[in-house]
Amino acid sequence: MLPCVLAYRTTALKKLEINYPWMLMDKGDAVFVPTLNEEITKEEGLKSALSSGRFVKHQFGIFDGKLGVLFIVMRRKPD
Image (cartoon, rainbow, N blue to C red; front, side, top):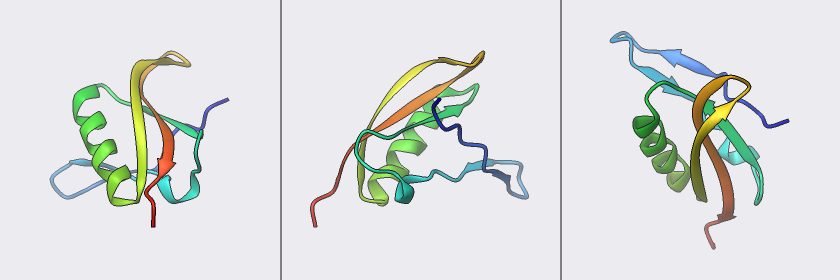
């Protein structure tokens, strides 16, 4: 079973922030982020992964009846 990101936090302007678990993930690990806006979630997830030193690929899909984006860690940035 894939881990599902449930660490959501809203700001004063009701913008949803997602806390991605990149630092806890190694090559081959995956995380599914349920969302209604796939493109924005994809862009934010890729930016977050690169800033955390991870290269990831994404795939849109449905998991457990929820629409979202699956992120798979390909490798860490070389030191």
